[in-house]
Image (cartoon, rainbow, N blue to C red; front, side):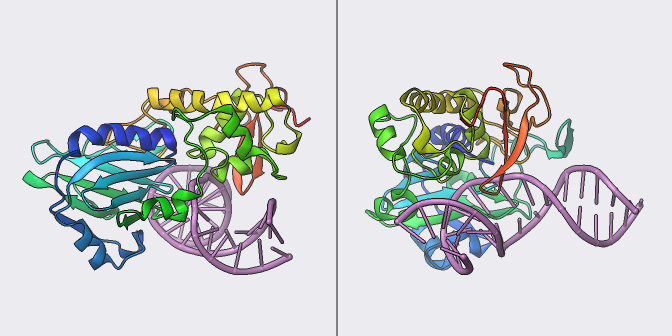
Length: 296
DNA sequence: AGTAATCCCTGGCAGC
DNA sequence: TGCTGCCAGGGATTAC
């Protein structure tokens, strides 16, 4: 489940490798992953474009091109890796303690889950692989990105300089629903998914179903501060690898070893020792500490 | 209008 | 051993 820290890990790994390189040719093997344009048009738009920047907005990876932008959302299981012609493919599989059969870290040749390839010079390429096929690729002409609803409706960028408590509060107010459902809807902040939403709520000691309107100022501030903390920790740890996440060079992250609540239902809270609870919120498994995170 | 269920998809895994 | 059915979930869409 690539969330902001995972996408940022990919972005940082990819940027030095692909910036100022040229996409000679795009190859799409699963047409439905391309949104907005017929595949042939999408590939035509890509061909010959220079990659001038590699950015991120929320969970979107954004390749700034000479003319336009390539946006990639990784959905549930998307991987964007750099394939180096001079580097040996990593062979075989290894059995991971928690997740069973896993691709070894490192680069791999395209397989049946590799749905798009961006061929660069010298035979290098950017590879898009997505087992569950929930991700999407989209080309945006100059000026279209900011008007694209998937981008324009996003909440604040929690690691940006303009992430302030005033703006955070303004985007929180007047919503009747519960906290976690709102966070998953990318408001007031973009980039949280199921893992980091649970982690942020735990760090802020807030119940996932707590009503936004019932939050006291100190609680709003605690959430405002907790969000960038859990995200920055995730980035420091190179992302959370549960099943599918890999960095730009195919490497695993390690943040799964630092999670406080996600995936720990039935285990003990590290803070107070209470047994962590599991509930369903907005169709998503949600884990929290019933003692540290009171609803009222 | 705002919230909640539905759907897309594959592979891991429990159960028989 | 091999089959079946369930589970994981981001976000657009549909339903209330």
